[in-house]
Image (cartoon, rainbow, N blue to C red; front, side, top):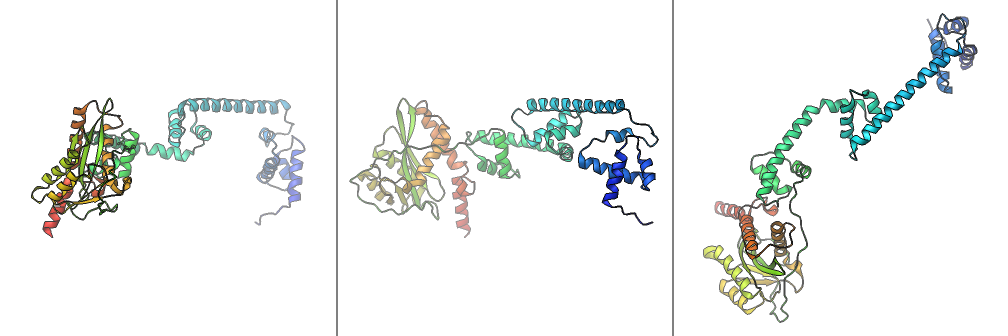
Amino acid sequence: MAKKAYSAEFKADAVALYLSDPSHTFDGIGNDLGVSRETLRNWVRAERKRTGVSAIADRTRTSGSVGAVSSESVLEEENKQLKAQIRKLETEREILRRAAKYFGGRDQLVSRFQFVDDHRDTFPVKWLCQILEVSRSGFYRWRTSAPARAERARADQELAEQIRVIHADSDDTYGSPRVTAELRDAGFEVNHKRVERVMRENGIVGVHLRKTVRTTIPEPSATPVPDLIRRDFTASAPNTKYVGDITYLPVGDGQFLYLATVLDLNSKRLAGWSIADHMRTELVTDALRAAAAARGATGLDGAIFHSDNGAQYVSKDFADLCRELGVIRSRGAVGTSADNAAAESWNATLKRETLQGRKHWNGAGEARAAVFRWITRYNTRRRHSTLGQICPIDFEQRSAMLATAA
């Protein structure tokens, strides 16, 4: 049977006829017009939706009613709806009050889901999700994934314990890259981003850079020495290119010790150093002799040593020692710390990781012990990013093995 087509004018007249008298029913008007009850009901619903008129009267009509709907019934129905609306508003207000206290400034998606989960036995989940503006499907997915989240949290806690051990062993200096390298060497398959996140969440922080103080005292009458490094702080093999500098070690009450260094640019190994309570030339010559002794039979013969233009490095005694050891001298420009940046950077790292924010040590003995311990660990254990996260001496040993194999 073909479906009847009704004009818009016919539909409007049918709806108007139905609404003209409260006693009219869908069955009665439908039979008079030759329209099914449901078709007429749909037309009326569409009109009420368009005009925004309440459908209370529709719900109070019945197919068998013939009398007019009493005003008391309409008022009773309206009163019932108003009470329900008030209860809903009161419930929403209570939910929002609890939510404001619950979140406490941490209003994130996960904490909203947690709030819904914590209060789902008190309020309908549908209302909770609507008021907090989260989807019910998202909430239920979040609940389903709870066991996996708990397992990840447990694994992160175990990882945090491993990180704390490594961090403490580094005197609380390692950041996430070196901690990651330690974990991988220990057999843990872990991503550096996860290590960084776990460290951040557990307040485990490496030591950061801080401003350094220069100790170079230029010597205006120095005999010129060429710059053989030219800010290329690399070397193709160990014991070929070195840099050195003097840095101060604050020991309190305005007193200082001074550290002179000899750093290999290939392996980053501190081959020689000297600590004294003065900055006389013996400070730097003692450090250079120590480096020659550390290199054994070959010494420093033929190696380049680069420094700034401090009075100690331009002195006659230092030049004589370089000739004696076969060291080729190199110096940067006067007043330009960038020409000796590798040595400056090493000094900054030493003080950053030993002082760790303190302004000074409590005495000369404490300073000497701290520096000696750190240098030993630096050469033998501390991981270096430019060496592929291994220590300088391990790097030299690998280089020697590769050279022998070749």
